[in-house]
Length: 281
Image 1 (spheres, rainbow, N blue to C red):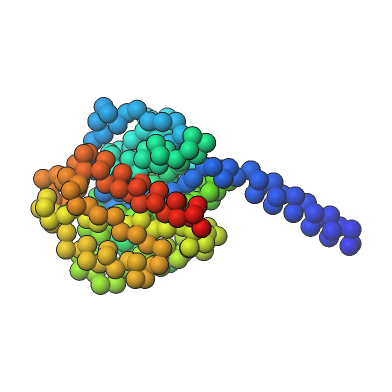
Image 2 (cartoon, one colour):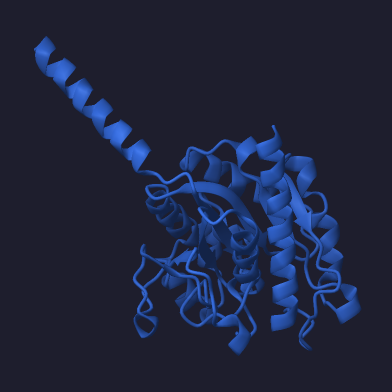
């Protein structure tokens, strides 16, 4: 019996070591979630069609018209979220990283976002109560993630962890939570759950949260930026990305393609500064 137990232990240890060493520490993975601005609400343009193959995306759903299979990596040409999305901050976030990082580093994105959703949709425990009250037009979007976007994000992230290392999380959300003084604590709950479910260390995985469309472009929800500014008070490793100067669309809610490019570069530059700090320490 002892020999069987020892043998089982050794086999388990060999399996664990094999999995650990199958990870490529030079493959940096980033999780993205939020509502329509993170999904991408502006049509990609010709200049956005050329992408360095070091920038990869894992599709969180099947997109047969684009040859994408859920859970598989492909070159990160837009859209990076669902099959019908547009350009988003995640696009030029990743492009900025691969441009500035050493050639041996690859960058991977997993984007699970739902247009118009409140932050409650990503609540691990209570998401269903929100889904039950979601408008009809949003339900098919949610169904594309089997009714649980948070779980889909975690499932895809676990697959990705077999290939690389999760380095950070990108968030853009808030338009659908106006005047919600509890928003920061709700985001903290989601962040904490991701840390637990993916065995991540908070001090090593920053949360980058972008501001909503600014007042200079008649942003209808720019006042919500006061709540986003408070995220670092509840999540020590949270960092706010300014939307100032990022061109908006006439609807007062979304960014233009030009705006997304500038915004995404800012996300990327902030992450590069954090990676530099990690390297220095």
